[in-house]
Image 1 (spheres, one colour):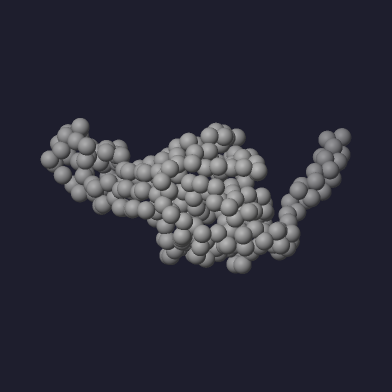
Image 2 (tube, rainbow, N blue to C red):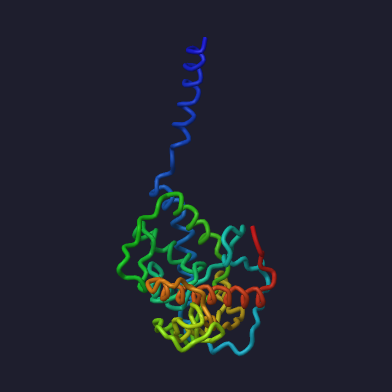
Length: 265
């Protein structure tokens, strides 16, 4: 009896498992999405000159009329995303990422769509030219292209002033309360010149090509950064702090300008 049961269950499980392993081919995913996504990308590309030539933002205001509320992918996992974040540099070649240091993770979705349609890969990143873009699988391509097909709003980041954090410098002339201290005890620390970013975000309706307004944000390194005492990690800790502060400043400014944004999934 046990032997018969084992054979019976084996007969049921194997076909179900085999069926579950069948996936979509990348070429089928691209064929399904190509026409609507290429049409959407053409509308995004048409916004480049307008985004370059618009005057500086003088007041933080975005007016959305006649359309759904923007849902921006600043947080992972939110549903119903209909907006994309790009940098002005990303619009020069949609199949590549512009040369943008400390890029916010929410950006680059439009470039991923263009890249997978033309190269079947993640987009080349000019800020990291030594990295070969990996291939994009069919499941990820399906998700990426779905977002572009649903795109209604484009948020374009224009950087106005940027200073990268300096390399850390070892010092003994500091205290635990020293505003220039990276991390350490009262007698030994690393000092650094903090990073600074001043930028503005221009909001567009992709369908109509209309400029809906914009808002600015400023991000700086924290006055004191808690990093490992291992010298090899200090520079990375300083960079990570500045990167997080940029993300936080952008999110805070976006939530203020677009107060209807979801907070979590």
